[in-house]
Length: 632
Image 1: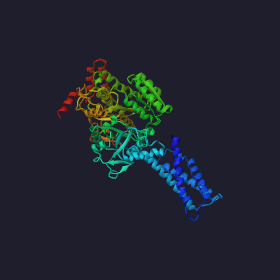
Image 2: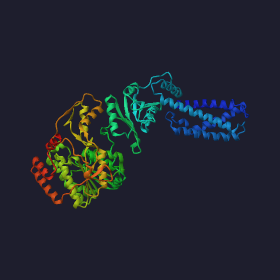
Image 3: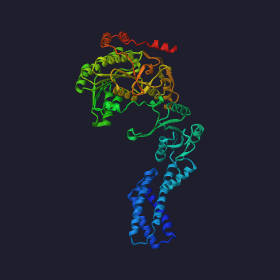
Image 4: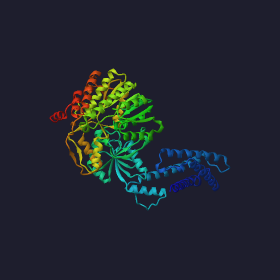
């Protein structure tokens, strides 16, 4: 079929040339009127020069239905080369000559016709998808130009979409859909707020304002889905439109347009991601300074197979470290990220995996002795709140004493920097997990006052999509038809994505001097109830119930606001702040650790919890906090 279309185009070009030749060689009535022989001589020379140049320039090897400006420029250059060859041959061969003006007119008229035929061909192809009289006429034209059978009006049924945004991204999507005969979608209209565009057409697609694009108008256009194609859209506006069209029963999609940073330049229509239910721009906290800091360094990540740890590995792999060591007690997680990075980077990344617990001092000593890491990121921790309430001793031993082991080995083996991953649950904790993380923070800050290593702590909120978070749970429950369970409809949480959390850890470590406790401005809190409702709507599953199950042990209705700007110090990144916190002396830390160790040796979780309450004065009982909040 492709070869047939190429020859069909040659045939059309010959027809255009025949018309130009008749007008300027045969019917021309000027002083240099040609004889019959002269007409044939000029016609043969001009045909050979023009079409030889086009063949050499691969003009007939181009797919003109997708042709952009570069295709037309190539045609101009090849025909100019053909004109020069024609001019030379015409002047030196013993034939009947014509004036330069007549020769130029012949080539120009032929070129104009060739350009016109291609523009009509491309326009007919692009606009032939519309179910309108004009569209059908153009479709017929396209079939004629393509050598296809005109009488075959059977067309592929495509999903009709309205594109929100008639800017570069939206127009790029429309062009892609119009140019791709295999596309499953066809654009029916743009929706935009620009007064310069509203009321006009782009690629024969009308542009409506938000007021004009009523549900009735969309129904007339048979629109089935709405595509968001404005990456920079304000979060509040996106949420407003999302709610409006979702309530009207439309399926919603997002168009990923490739940027210079997009891997492989891939773009596609997709469902809204869970992260986008936050309706805020993803926070970009990494920069060149961060990249330079980790380049050519030996980096050890404990808990490297977990949700945050594995993303830290992915981010660091891009920064060309000298060596990356993944350490985890859970072999499957470590293996998965190892294989992922091997596939992505091959031998370009010096990657090692160690299976060990941070509480096993001898195993950790072997790791430090083998690799002598310059940077240590401690992301290993038990983090599930309800489980740690019933396993207090394990939480203390892993989170607190494991951190103590890593800190001591950093000092012993001369690491440059130790970075700890913490949580907002460490702020006035009401559960064992949060209290253990607060104790870890105190250990690290104390070490910064007397150790040789530079220390920093990074504290952030709930991470969307991490193992054990509400997102995977909600997805499983929705897939089963419900119900979706939430502990309390009043619960609010601060959320961030896994890449955001990981980038924050890496940048804060790069900008730290020593002993800082970094926190991130995470924006507005999200009601878990709203998150559940959005996920149900997003899934398209109907009749899914939301059921309250009651607060779990150690759970509070709200997490503390991490960023109270009046109480924090600013950094070079407007989203990162430093909390003012007094570091305890080494003696105070040792006293509290001794008490915790003795309590754990009893094997009594309740005794261990009370010892933890003494070690962390801000550790409060959840019922006290929740009762106070409920009464406000």
